[in-house]
Amino acid sequence: MLNNFWYAVEFSQEIGAQPTLLRLFDRPIVLFRDSSGLLHALDNVCPHRGAALAQGKVEGDCLVCPYHGWQFDGDGTCVKIPANLPGASIPKRAIVQTYPIREKDGWVWLFFGDSARSETVAIPDVPLVGDETLRSIQGDFSWRVNYERAMDNGLDFAHAPFVHAGAFGNPDEPQVEALEITTDPWGAQATVMLKANSPKGIWKLLMRQKPEPVKTRTGFMLPNLTFLEVSLPFGRLVIWTAHVPIDATTTVSKWMNFRSFFTGAWADGDARKRTLKIFEQDRPIVEGQRPQALPQSYDQEIFVAADALQVKFREMRDRALGTDQ
Ligand code: FES
Ligand SMILES: [Fe+2]
Image 1 (cartoon, rainbow, N blue to C red):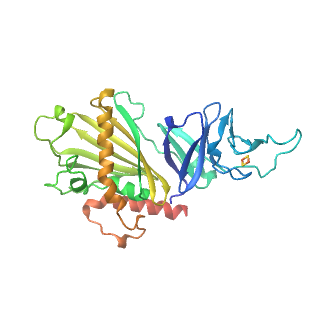
Image 2 (cartoon, protein in one colour):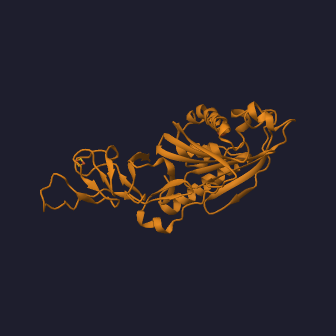
Image 3 (cartoon, rainbow, N blue to C red):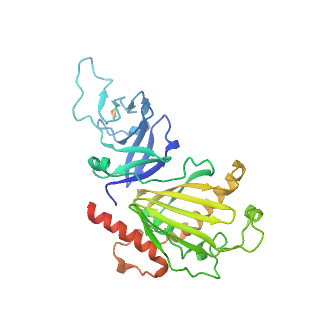
């Protein structure tokens, strides 16, 4: 896993007044908001008898354990033991490990690694949230895959005509033009003209004749984000996805979908259906890949020109692993 990165783990608006359980790299973590709305992340294990703190509740600035009511503040320090008589002290070891956590661009970001380094590592910018010219919806897609395989799939141009024929990519013209890749501190991206299929459903309203090739931009930001931007003749469609690593073979891909056309709520259901359909088309393929984790060595795979962005992903991942392990 990539250490010392901020992982996008949840939509900000999903964290309400009561504790939320998150599993990240097989580690249960509880998130809660204190009375000022500030988020905190603690290990989900009470140091008293090991109860799951996420089953408790929030009171004021504290998370209250469901078993014996011990109260923990946002720093993970126990500040109250209800069974104690007045004057009894709180054991020094009554502390829960915490994780640095922030909110930005509509996402909740959790720092995984050496907490002391969290101040010096920036959180990636994920633009578009709050852009009033765009309509946005969001959702989750849970699958039995390693998150690196899920990201790799999001960067893969050549599979579109085979896996998504009918949605985008034309099986009669599967060639991928030479990819020009641009990099930034967090990742890389490439733009290609994808041959389009004739539109179906309500999209027909927007396009009368045979479609032109569609400008498609895709890329990643380490550690766990990918995006896809499709420039259609009638507007833009952008999907940002955080691939949340639940464990080695489970990922929840949390997607935010932005569109500049059909900006009324009436088209939300259709936009959701289209997004989920794309994931469902990918599901059997990616869940069937072996090994389940993305290979660490290049000679276990074969790369052709169309895979250049995926090569970049591996290079940047390996560089991050090299400096941070
Ligand atoms: S197990 Fe949490 S208070 Fe006892
Ligand atoms: Fe796909």
